[in-house]
Image 1 (cartoon, protein in one colour):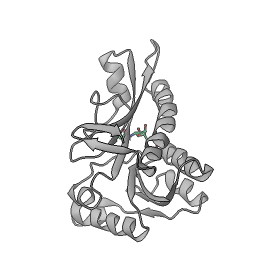
Image 2 (spheres, protein in one colour):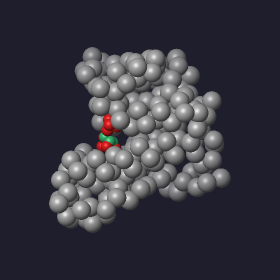
Image 3 (spheres, rainbow, N blue to C red):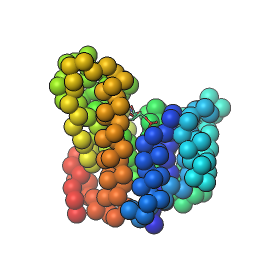
Image 4 (cartoon, rainbow, N blue to C red):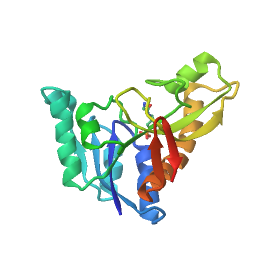
Length: 200
Ligand code: GAR
């Protein structure tokens, strides 16, 4: 059984999709702890409903990023975490987390990377005028949404889409592909070769 730690900043709908898939018994994984950098994040309540420890570490309460991340690492290790999933965690992961979990941190991003990294990916897609966008699950490296790609799903952009309508359709795909990526990892099916993630 793979112990997962999930980092969030907000409502936690991806967190919910991961919890539900784990609880359904479809994948050999369990959400062991949820950590938020925002005290009001809705995802904390979702975790509590499933009796998952839900912890808040606010970066401003720490003297620097390394100290903040070390506290996260301690909490993750305390719960036996072997895979860290970022689910709407709106901070760049730093050196401390990366060193303690090499190739064991994954993220979901609401665009077909490498297009539209960073904030407001869906609005960036609309502003650019693309006709297809989507979402990506990738391993996390030191860059912003730059790590090796595990799985992507394409979503067409409709002519009258707003940021909200497009985000909602992308989100449905996020909930579909994130658990698949975690299943691959939990079943040890992936290998990373340079920028490529391949099935073993
Ligand atoms: C999701 O759309 C996720 O892809 C995005 O934030 C949303 C979180 O929703 N993440 C990023 O933009 C990271 N760069 P959720 O809290 O309901 O899972």
